[in-house]
Image 1 (spheres, rainbow, N blue to C red):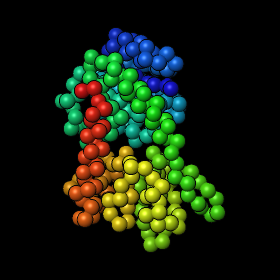
Image 2: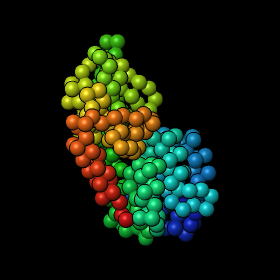
Image 3: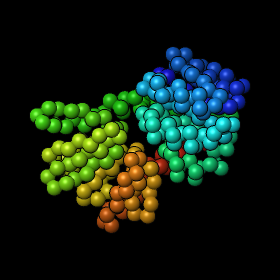
Image 4: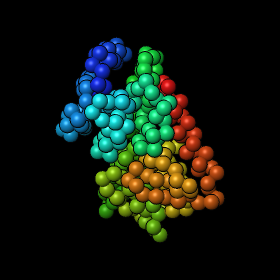
Length: 239
């Protein structure tokens, strides 16, 4: 696996890289002391990067805004904040970006190892695919690429960051082939919890900025699942 790390403290950078390599000597770790250099590097190398570790307070930029930029441009990269001020920034973090984890400085080795193992495990999840038929041909869509699925009479529109795929299939039949990351928030929509940016009143705001309403009959169950998802995310942090 290949990681990038951005922190303006060069002493920390060196030490953190060593800690990463202690957990797994096969890791490829590239370090940057400012956000601009890292973004320029990722413009050409993003497809090879599995995770980015970003300090929240950087001398040349706001680490949260930097992470949001990465999330918009390179959605496949796992984002992990490293900070001494995690609790102070919780609200801003989750309003702007959905991190894979948050690590509090000084970073505990057991948390670091836990997250590296989770990144490895996420590579297996990426292998989960939805098989669909378009024009008599089969197409495989990775679960983590699906933002939401919309029903339109006898059709279903599968929205991904790059494209929309239309098939003739019922939402119920599609839902049975997905995992627990997908929930039916109303009659016409299945949403991927991993692609929800925020909850506004009774609407989900997705990572493509689409607002999807939650039907009154499903609000209690759907909101509970959404909160549990975020609670489990917070429990993965080292804060």
